[in-house]
Image (cartoon, rainbow, N blue to C red):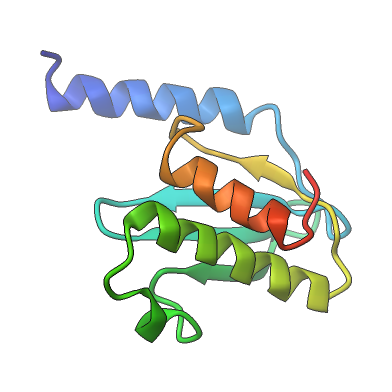
Length: 122
């Protein structure tokens, strides 16, 4: 098994590779995902102005009480839907999905599907 230092290096290398190909604008922001062991976070970033347009997570006030007893992937789907709802309120209908160093699988995939089902295109 690889050491944790090696895994951190692999994750950093994958993040640079994925992030180098993506760029978000105010009309089509980059959805940056971070996943911890317990929570998932996503923010819509307009790289042209260096500003976060909207954000959502399992710690958000809107979702905090309704996520208890849910599986983590189900909670991630709700987080994606919440972010899509916030972006459509700002007249943003398209985005670029930045999975970061995480594989497009499990909770990251569930978040993307939740955002798509709520009307966001990417």
